[in-house]
Image (cartoon, rainbow, N blue to C red):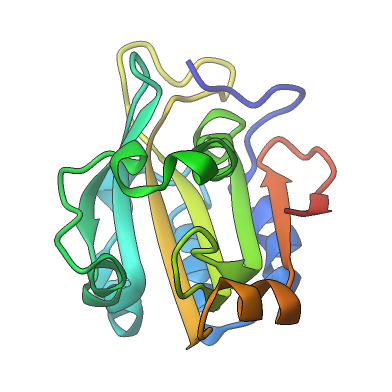
Length: 200
């Protein structure tokens, strides 16, 4: 069971903390919708309405969490997301798409979104394991389910992740990307803990 560790889950307060770190209007639109469906209880998968973020959908993906394997699997993905890989990612696990040399780093912040749970923002260099990395930002938001006996003391199981990746430019190669950009990871726990910021 994924639970807030030190306090109660409070999505609107976490969203308020996260908003200043976002750089694109697309990210703000997705965060605003997530916050809107989190006023009375943590954001549920069933309450997330793609029509409310229609301008963002080509950049959005939905992933299902499989706790037994600690794997995230793509359930849906927008056209721009799939174009970056060159094929459909639906039904594929994150571990199938990320190079083994980068998987531990990538999976760490994806699973933090689910297991902490937390809002996660990665800004700067994206897809740095690929031949042509990008520059932009990535927003990850946990979604929750109504399993048997939940919620208990306001602790719920994170069952899905909704993500948004906005790439503003593509670098010529990895050398240019590492020479001209850095990346920052922001983790905003839903339980009220302090925001964690680090170069990543």
